[in-house]
Image 1 (cartoon, one colour):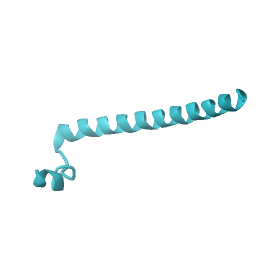
Image 2: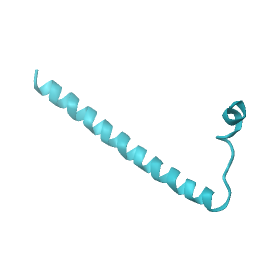
Image 3: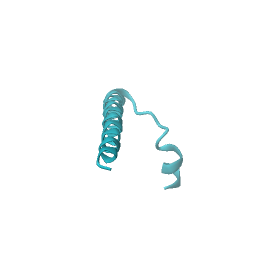
Image 4: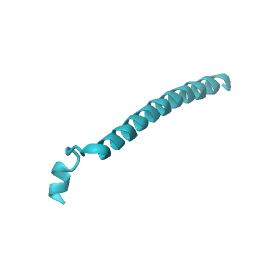
Length: 54
């Protein structure tokens, strides 16, 4: 397990696997950015409506 913890995340896959993983990583990063934007909008809306209800 120690070997896995030290090096597994630093190894780069080769060939098609790398390309597929890179595509997935890019997709997940875009999705993450979109979700962060959505969350920010929802937080602002919640704050606005909380202020209005007082």
